[in-house]
Amino acid sequence: MFRKYVSGLILLVAGLTIGWAALAAKAQQPPAPGQNAPAAHAYKPTPEDAARPNPMKFTENSVNRGKRVYSTQCAMCHGDTGTGNGDLAKDMNATPPDFTNPATLKDRTDGELFAIIGAGSGVMPAQGDRMKDYHKWDAINYLRFISGRVPAKSTPDEFDPDHPTVVMQQQPK
Ligand code: HEC
Image 1 (cartoon, rainbow, N blue to C red):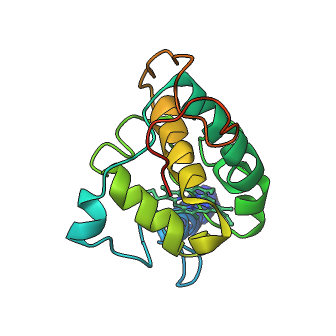
Image 2: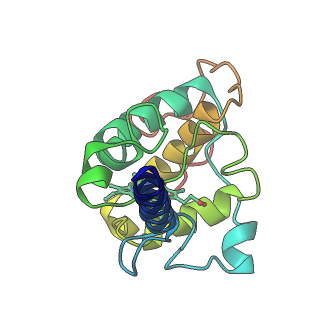
């Protein structure tokens, strides 16, 4: 009688363990194709892309303009603060990287980011000619800012493409 219970109990414990192991294995599986694993870029930046310099100085004005671009064009996926938890990304089952972690974009040059933003990546839409180039560069400066870098103070004579009556140095494309 007692032995019967014990063997029943052993079976139950074994069953639960197997079930749990199966669930854990499922949770660890990589996302199915089309579901976008992080860093699975559809676009591989070339050496020329990587070498392209950012014509927009890393200043407070540029970061502020970049923030406007980011809030309206990127935050729905990359999240309000850049951690990657935007509602649209959740709906699409996509997992954008955490831009607030300084390690995320550490090895990317501004030129590479410019190329990725222009070409799109996985579910991320290609900005190409849709967005002004200087807005892309400003958005990149904003990404550097949320990763922890401190922009230079803006000066009154700083180039401002959104208010071009302010004095200009050379105008970026
Ligand atoms: C529809 C959702 C979506 C939108 C909108 C979107 N992204 Fe993304 N983005 C992603 C996802 C998902 C990834 C990660 C997967 C990948 O790179 O293919 C990503 C990756 C990136 C990367 C690559 C980071 C790396 O690993 O090097 C950059 C940079 C980036 N996004 C910037 C932007 C900027 C700037 C905007 C706005 C102009 C934007 N994204 C808009 C979904 C989006």
